[in-house]
Amino acid sequence: MLASTEKRFRPSCQRETNHVVVLVDKSFGKQPTPEQKRREFIKDFITGWAAGPFLANMDRFERHVICEHCGKKVIDE
Ligand SMILES: [Zn+2]
Image (tube, rainbow, N blue to C red):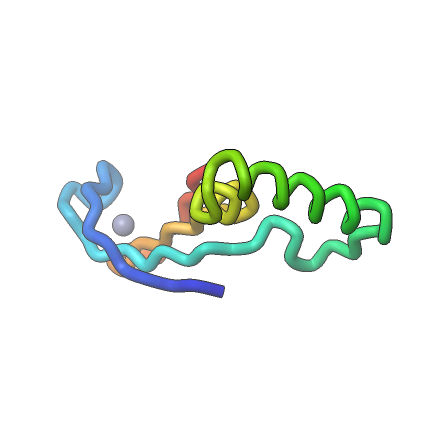
């Protein structure tokens, strides 16, 4: 799990606040079948080859952005 912080304007807070950004693996908590694992591997391989490792990686993460001021969490798709 990766975490960082960034400043964002939050309408609900009426100001720019610090936000903790956590990248959550979408497959976390799920039990993939061996068949799904194999397909994911092939998909990663192809997208990694076509678009570079960075994009291939971002595709499987959700960005959870948590406001340090009000504690509200937003999920960026
Ligand atoms: Zn807030």
